[in-house]
Each structure stands twice: as structure tokens, then as C-alpha cells.
Image 1: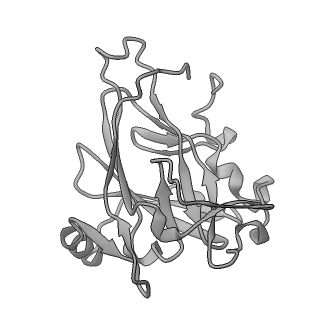
Image 2: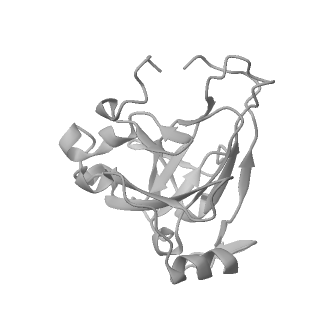
Image 3: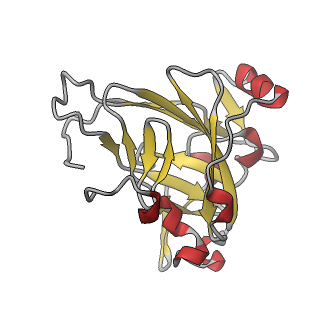
Length: 202
């Protein structure tokens, strides 16, 4: 990542201590892939790479709301069940996780103070303006962000933090596993990624 990687002008999507470099550039009006590139194939969904950078010493949980889980999940644990095709590797949305907790390296582990980087991405079934909820260790309400996947980027602008009764009820109910609506298979509800052994320069 370059010295100005955090700048929104470079397409970085930021939510408190966590950031996705260049993720906003996936918007079609920023030169991102067209909507057709996100179309499911044989019932499987494409994977979109999305490097995560988490500030040193912080813990962040990223959660896919229940309303999005038919078409979006998280892939930061190297899923091995992909199907290789001439158009790329495809997965079931249910192969991904509904939430992932990122634990960045402490300043003792990483004296430079650079953010910890986690490779991975999203499993995406169809073009969408997808919502994700971000929880930090210091807040009980989520930071809400939207991902421009095969759509224009206007909805990606930072939204006000909010908590509705529905969001609270869902968070309290979903402790161990979540079943995607209309499917018999369950999304993995929780994955935890610890401080990477090797730190990369930001």
C-alpha cells in the first residue's frame, strides 16, 4: 500500500480502526467490474478480493446482516470448497462466514505501529449495494457501510451510525450459528483471525 492509501480519493473504505484499501473502486462509475461479472454460475457465487487493514492494538468484528446473507458472506479463512471454472473460482455463499473478528497486532508485537493486514474477501452472488456492520471493541452499536459491487458508488458514502430494534434483536439471537433464509445449510457464524505472523509495510 502506498503512503496515501487511506485517502478516499484512492478508493479506501474506512470504518473507525478498520479499512479496505481501494474497495470503493469496485463501483462501476469508478471503473470497477460490470454487473454481469457478479452473476452466479450454476448456483455458485464469485469471490471478490478485499485486503483488510486494522489499526495496531485493536479488535474489530465485521458482520453481514441477516438480510444480506442470501447473497453475501465473508471469506478470510481460505475456503477450500471452491469450484474452478474458465471464468474463475466460484463458491456457495454459505461456504463463507456471517461474521469475522480481526485482532490486530499489539504495539509490542508491531513496534512500527503499522496496521495489521489480513488477506481475504467477500463471496458475492449478484451485483448489489451490500451492507456490512462493523463493531469495535469500544462501541456497542455498529458502524454501517455499504459495498458497491457492480453498482454505482454513490451509496458507498459514509452513513451515520445507527442502531434499530431489529438490528439489536438479530445480534442477541445469533450467537452460535445462522441459517441463510431459504437454504438448508448454515453459514459459519464466527471466525477469528489473530495478529499475522509477518507484518507487511503499509
